[in-house]
Amino acid sequence: MSVSLPVNPRLVRSYDLRGVVGTDLCDRDASALGLRVAAAVRKRGGSKVAVGYDGRQSSPALADALVAGLAAGGAVVMPIGLGPTGMLYFAVEVHDCDAGIMVTGSHNPVDQNGFKIVIGATPVHGEALRMLIDSDAAADDGGSVRSEQVADAYLTRLLKAAAGAAPLRVGWDPGNGASGAILTQLVALLPGEHHVINGTIDGTFPAHHPDPSVAENLAQLQALVVANRLDLGIAFDGDGDRIGVVDGDGEIVWPDQLLLLLARDVLRDHPGAPIIADVKSSRVLFDGIAAAGGNAVLSPSGYVLVREAMMRAGAPLAGEMSGHIFYADRWFGNDDALHVAVRLLAALGRSEATLSDFRRALPPTFATPELRLPCPDADKPAVLAKVAAGLGEVEVEVDRTDGLRVTTDAGWWLLRASGTEAKLTARVEAWTPAGLEDLRADLFARLAAAGWSA
Image 1 (cartoon, one colour):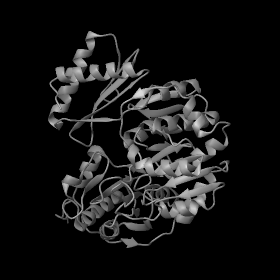
Image 2 (cartoon, rainbow, N blue to C red; image 1 turned 135 degrees about the vertical axis):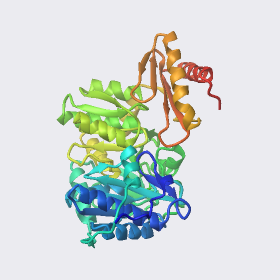
Image 3 (cartoon, rainbow, N blue to C red; image 1 turned 90 degrees about the vertical axis):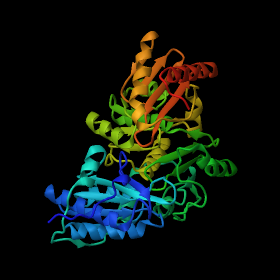
Image 4 (cartoon, rainbow, N blue to C red; image 1 turned 90 degrees about the horizontal axis):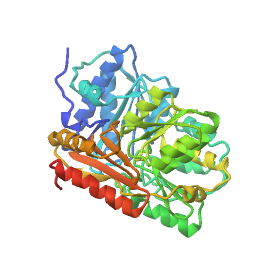
C-alpha cells in the first residue's frame, strides 16, 4: 500500500534537496525521503544504503529520521556518522552500497539543510530527483540498521593518495565544517608542518561562512599563511567537497588555476587524456591543458554535469570554478576535497616549482568574479535567445555548451542561466584591463538590447 506522506517539493534544487529547517524541511521530510530511496533501491534489486551527516545543528535529527524511513522501507541501512561528503562516497564504494545519502546544507546559510543522494554511485539530480520525490512508497519488511566506522579506512586511503608529498608547511581551514575531525587526524600523519584553524566542527560557523569560492572567506587563511611564512593554505566548504587554495604569497589560486596544476601532474601518467573544465574557467586553463599534451573539454557548469562529462569522456580529472574537483585517476570519480588536497601536496612533491612559482608563471589576465544578474526564471530563455541573435552582427567565436561563451581577440565573456536561482550568471576575462572594460561594456549593452535591466 502506498503512503501519502510527501516530501516537500520546495526542497528540490537542480542537484540536491535543500531548505530552511523547520519551515521547508522537517524530520518527516527526511523519513519520507528514506521510504522513497528504499523503494527505488529495492526496485533495482538492491538494499544497502549508507547515510552520513555534516556538522550542522539540525543534521543528527534529520539523519535519524532518514535512517528510520529507510529501514521502514526495507533498506539495510549503514549509518557512518559525522564526517565530510567524501567519506560518505568512500563508504558507498568500499562497502558495495546500493545508494548513499548525505545530510548536508553544504555552504548554505546556517538555518538550512538538505540531502545529497547517490543511487548506484550516480548522483540523483534534475528530472530523476523530481521523479524520486514524486514517487509513491510503502513500508516493507526486511529493513535493518547497522552502524559502520569508516573513518580509519578513509584516512588510510587518503594517506595512500598523498604518497610523494613534500614536507611542506601548510595552513588548513575547514571552516568549522564536517572535515575538521578527519583533517586533524590526517595532518598528524602527513610530512611537513601543519597549522589548522577553525578545526572544531560547529554548525553555526562562527569564524566565517564555509564557502571557499568567495574571496572574503579565505582572508583568515591568507593571514595565517603570510604571518607564519607557510608554503600554502588549503580551505574546505561546510561538507568538504569543495576546495580553496592560497599560495605562499597569500594570493588565491583560483580553482581553474589549481586544475591546471593538477592536470599537468595527471597528464604525466595519462598523456593525451581529456581533462574536463566548466564554461566559467579561464582560457589560460584550456590553453595550458593543450600545452601539457592533454585534450581540454568544455562542460556545462554544475558539479553533477561536470562529473557526467568526465565519465562520458573517460577523463582522469575534471573540475569547475566553484571548487568541485573530481579524480577518476586512482579514486572514485567524485568530488572529495580532502583527496584533492593530498593530491595537490603529492603533485607539488613531484614538481620543481612551488605553488607561488606556478601562479606567478601563469599568463596574466583580468577577470570579473561571477556576476549574478537578477532575472525571472520565465524570462531567462528569451533574454539569452535575444543576446544570441545579436551575435551575428560581429566576428566572434560562440560556444553554446552552457549558455553563450563568446570569444574575441581581447578575451571572452560568458552568459548563462543559473540552474539554482532566478538569475543569469556572467563572467568576463581579458588580456588587458582595457579589454576587460570593453568586453564587459559589450556584454551589458547586449543585455540591455535584449530587454534585461538590473
